[in-house]
Length: 179
Image (cartoon, rainbow, N blue to C red; front, side, top):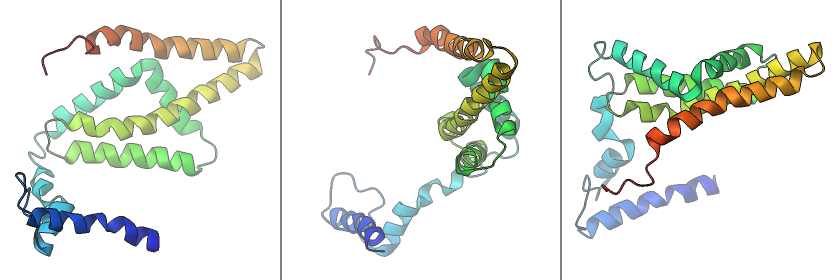
């Protein structure tokens, strides 16, 4: 309780700072109602279900494209294998499922134009499943052939690494001086 209460002390700083009339005073949080408006994210509530259901189809397509470009076809298959092959639904599987499900739903229903950025935790959940998928396939091939496990791991590294190499020149911002 003490640690939780100590963490909330940061919210005392907001009204004190707002009362000092700073140049930027977002929400003017000098009282409880202003503090609640700021801390609850009230200004963003209008973005939920904005444009729904008209935006759902294009968002689903962009969602699928985002996952395809993040993982590639091999990565998507291995992620599905990992999610399905997890025999014991342990804490890590639940974290991956929660991360993927909740953040995917949030990104699809939240009306911000940069909604693919909200998919990053969902991609993290899929990455956990991808690792489990590689492990499952490598164990399966290793049980059938002596070179099966190392060959599977090498092919998975190649299939997952090549998209990184192909994509890097398009996203390399090391020479971008516009900002």
